[in-house]
Length: 163
Image (cartoon, rainbow, N blue to C red):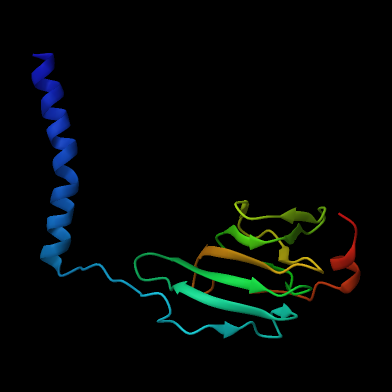
């Protein structure tokens, strides 16, 4: 009897994704692929960045999902303004060496493979070191049409402060 119950449970677990996929197909939902290079790079706006930063969008938030992502490449000395995210942000450093700082905290070095979670509403900045560029993937959610609240510039004194 236990074997029959276990097999029944296993069958249900295996069939659930198939039923969900069939429902998606029946509703007309389809996967989409954005090919590498299909989206144009944009330069970071001077209102949001100090120095040269290039943004390579990966994907926008598509309803009902609120998640979007992109690569941001900072040239040496470049950094974001202080900012917050309404639903937080995850960064994955992919190349170079950078710095990140939470308001009231110490500046910290970040390197390839580091994953940084910034909780919702936490004021912070991130960017390259003064001598080395840095690229990270930024992943965030949108709330009420916004995924970031830009604040004031990171001063040179704040940027150059010892870590």
